[in-house]
Length: 432
Image (cartoon, rainbow, N blue to C red; front, side, top):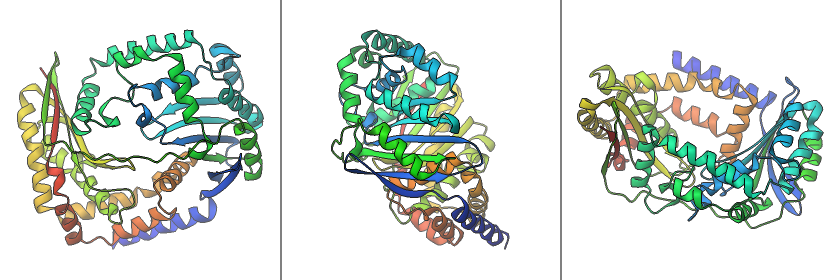
């Protein structure tokens, strides 16, 4: 009864959000290209936040030059060629404007935020940056020096090392095999022309999604966007490739001078974002390793046996790839036992499923915490973008909650049994 009342409260909140604040999907015609815009007006604060999201343009496009996407984002954060890094940054700071570029695996993003009173200046600086990035050999060498120094320091970050080693195992011969930040060898090879070519290929309207919100009317926003982005070329729509894990269960150990063992593990998980049963993957993932001290992994490994400081696992379902992964840190002498226990827990999870108590607990948390995921404008815009990007309806979260609320134990356990591929775990271990 409590769960049903909680569910009704959550659905009521969803309904109110739909009336008061929901994001809308619109389109702007720029150079004869219909560019999708995810927009939500919010007047509680006099601010604007906007993201230019270029699809299929992140490190998935690194190809043979590992780290070029991340490197190119860093160059864009060095301002324009006309003003240079320092002057451009000073002008942004004096007007409380934030303008940053970041690179993910599937996307390349430019984010702009400003106070309402300086919106015109903010869009002018954005336009200047798009037309005149700071293409200078000295900037390339500066970024190289900083990035190579960072990568050298990360050689002693064994979480980073173990995580990348796992990706080498799971995603061999795919763009996911290499770290998005590049390697010392690949970064040292990057030249100015490489960055120019990457940015030129990335900045095109055919692969653009705009995410914007704040204290601004849509018509006004539309005019400013058109003016700022008119310099972008049309380009061609890029099709996103997908990658499957083909690796057989493998364990790879790296010996380092460390005081504890770092254990990362992962396996194939057969799913795509539009699968109708993904809500069950969300519940199963939460119970197995995503719920902190309430999860199977944490309970069995840390609470009952004291073998690890932390233990987590989760299912990641993306457009380009999906997999199950997790990690734990443990004492050196406990590493072998902890590794065996992870495999045993996952095997048992698939074979026997979850209990009624675990399902009820998962339902209560997932339903009860839902309003916290849409408290801020940034959260709502982020969710709206993810739904649009993955081809899901904007009311998908509401429907997902209804499915979770009505989920039966036997259906969940049947779903878990159908995903036996997750027991074929590969391990990446850094130990002494």
